[in-house]
Amino acid sequence: MSREILFYTENKNYLVTYFKAKGNNFGIMQEDILFQISNKLKEVRKNKGVTLQEIADEAGVTKSLVSQIENSRTIPSLPVMLGLIKALDIDLNLFFKDIISTAPGDNVLIRRKEEYQPFTKENAKGFYYHRIFSKQFKDNHIDVVLLRLEKDAKRPMVRTNAYEFKYVLQGSVEYTVGKNKYVLNQGDSMFFDANELHNPKCINGDEVLLLVIYFFNEA
Image (cartoon, rainbow, N blue to C red; front, side, top):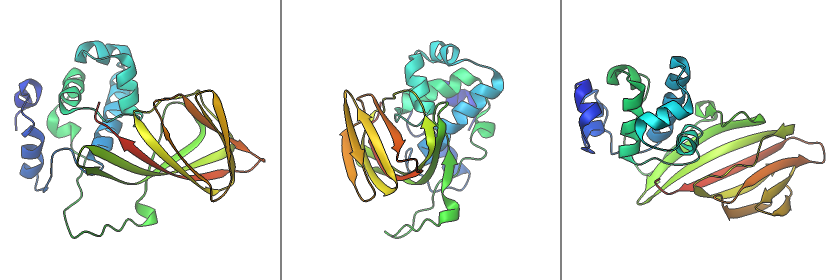
């Protein structure tokens, strides 16, 4: 597939064609491909010295949306993703070189601990994420993540374009959602609309380990 097709088509089959040409049996933007692309966008943008505002202006979207996409806080539509890749002016083959899809199999997915993928969000101190798996179900994208919080972890309040489920595997945490604060101990769980400003804080001087499930809608 030529670079020109990437830059000027609105055809949703272009990525499918590209991955099939590389020998991957790939459905439209499935599995954790979206998050791999989001991470790659962030990496390429920083390597090129392009600011969030510059890529947003070039792609015709807001700076806030680009930041949310790069930090896995929203799932972009295909036209938005196309626009961001175009704005970076990078060869398609280079961009997708290290992005892989999960081969289809039976209805059981096994992910070994050593296969969990570490990633970062914003410039948060003491927040360590590992993606277990990510999957598209009809109109929703589900992202399953382990989050480890160091006892002095901190960051600004954030929003995520998703509903979130949290389960405390270890430690105790105070979760602020909007104007309310909730204390969760080991074995406790919560579910909330993450479009509200929210933030966790370790309490009792211990590290916290959370199982987090994001239920995304496409932006």
